[in-house]
Length: 200
Image 1 (tube, rainbow, N blue to C red):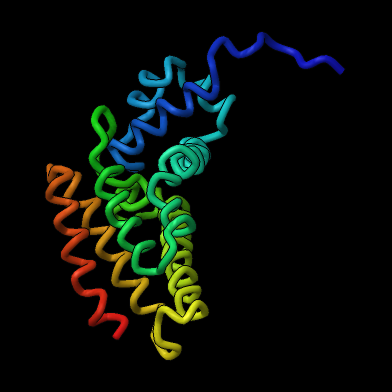
Image 2 (cartoon, rainbow, N blue to C red; image 1 turned 60 degrees about the vertical axis):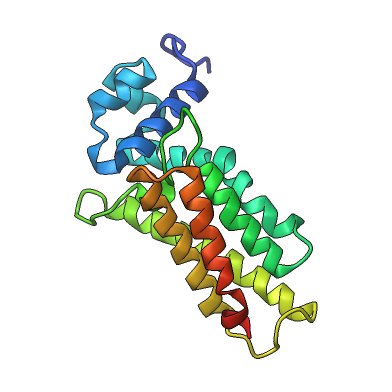
């Protein structure tokens, strides 16, 4: 049976990217429907028809964010030859990614929801899950360092991963508050100065 109604008069992928930028800049709660529809170039009925709800739109936007922004940060974990270089690369790439000219400062996954309430509980839960996954990725890379003989077999990799994820989250807030790339790189280098003590 043929689909009824007029075809969408907008580019869904482009509209999603623009919505992502609004959410990235304002966060889930502060991004109003007016903000979103204006940026996306559509009206509210079209938004609901194409994406279902504001929460569903955000969930698609966060997936897109991971695809287009994530590789710059996470690729070092697989490409670096040692665990130490992997973590250093992760933090230094974070400094660059969180301060890109022409893009919102900081990280959408970290800054998307800052205060949990009834209206954003689902989104907040999704972001917490992503952050937990990110911490696990760091832990797994450190576990690989143990397997390769770079790190002590009894190293608590979960604690080390939690430390470096916390540094990254702080870098996101610093970037949103106006810290430049040089400042974030200095934070990354300072965090790596603690490496030997953490893994020793």
